[in-house]
Image 1 (cartoon, rainbow, N blue to C red):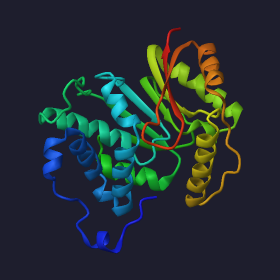
Image 2 (cartoon, rainbow, N blue to C red):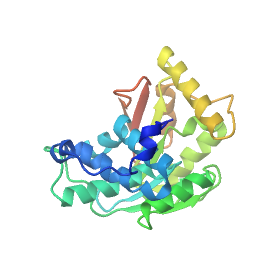
Image 3 (cartoon, rainbow, N blue to C red):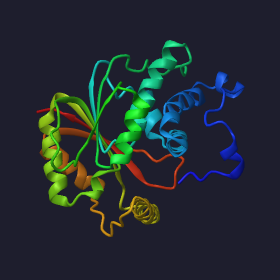
Length: 257
């Protein structure tokens, strides 16, 4: 996904901070988070840096203050732990005084747990996070979900069949106490061109991981909202694909009963 040039392969894996980074707290934050993956190898480092630079979800979580201080955070399908590295780097940058003006302070205390199916990603996450988060290998359909204040499911649910989706969402509702929050990112299937592009990319990604998934199980945004409301959530939806060719939507679902 992030091919390296011949020249790039001869440079040090982690660049020294640039003058631009000193003036731009967002660039410095991305680099601080990506540096955590140097120990996991060149691919892991460049993947994290590219993801953090171009996916709007990371900055949105902090800018909107969606992760509460002291919260128990569970990331389902956490991959190599990029989100957790970002949250830890945000705490570090804020303490150093390098923080965007007008943004709320990032959470200073968090309990972080991630669940990931792929063993290679679990290994990379554990190297990058160095014991600051608990990363477990497991299947979302069967793994136990610990009591949590925030549960994230980002770009994952469409890999499960509809029955498995419903069972997982019900278990998430049980794991969240009153006032707990589910952050669920899904694709807008009504955006025809963007939805088709998303499907093509999903096929390529699964093929690169050694298996081709021919069928993805998506719903419209109103259908997702209806499902969550039946489980006792109050739901708001906002676009979450700015700067990308996709049509992603973030559902912020708060447990009210």
